[in-house]
Image (tube, rainbow, N blue to C red; front, top):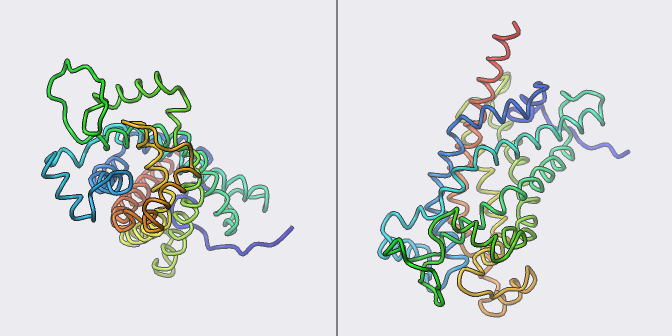
Length: 327
C-alpha cells in the first residue's frame, strides 16, 4: 500500500469530531438550532442572485449593471428572491456535509491506522471531501433548482388569483418555493427536481476538496505554535480564503449548472451538460464559463468564514457539554 504524507491534526471539524464518538448526531443537533448557516445564507444571497442572473440571464452586461438593473426593476426585495428554501435547509445540509466528512475521515483513519482519532493523511482528507461533496448533491440539487427558478423570475405578481400560463420571459411562473417545487415535480417528475445534478456533481465533488484541504492548511499555518485549537480570527481568515478558492475554481461548472436549472422556467433550451457547454461556447465564447467568478469569490469569503466560525463555536460548546456531563 502506498504511504501518503500525513498532515498535522486538524484544528477544527475533523480533529474535534474525531474525538467525538457521536459526532454526526452531535453536529446535527448543534447546527439545527444554531444561526451561522442561516447568517451565511442571508449575507450571501444577494450576491448569489446577481451571480445567477449573470450566468443564466441575458442583457445584464457586467456586475454593476446587473446590480443596478435588479434594484431599479425589483427594488431591494429582488436580491432576496428564492432565499427561503436555502434558509430552511441550511442546517440539515451543513450538518450532513460536515458529518459525512468527519465520519469518513474517522473510518479511513480506523482502517489505515487502527485508530479513528489518528491524524488523517492528505489522501484521506481528499477522499472524505469528495464523499461529502457527492452526498451533499442529493440534498442540494432540489434546493438549488427551486432557488434558481425563483431568482430568474424578474417580475412580481399583481393579483393573487392570476392563473399562470406564461409564454414569454418576464411573466411569473411560480408563486413561491412550495408552488415551484410542486409544479416542477408534477410537470417533470423526479428528473425535473434533480435537473442539473450531473453538473452539480462535477462542481461539488472537486469543489469540496478545494474547500476543506485549503482550510486545513491555512488554519494550521496561521495558528500560533503551541495552541491546542485555532483562535476565532484564524478560523475566520482560513475559512474565508478556502471559500474564495473553492468558489472561484468552481465557477465554470457553476455556470453550466445555473443554466441547466434555470432552463425550463419559460423555455427548454438544453438537452444536457454537454449540449449546454457546446451551445454556451458557440454562442458566447470561452468567457461565458467565467461569468460571475468575481461575485463567487467575493461571496465565498463571508459565507465560508461565517460557516467555519459558527462550527468552531458549536464544537467548543459541544465539547464543553460533554466534559460537564462526563467529568
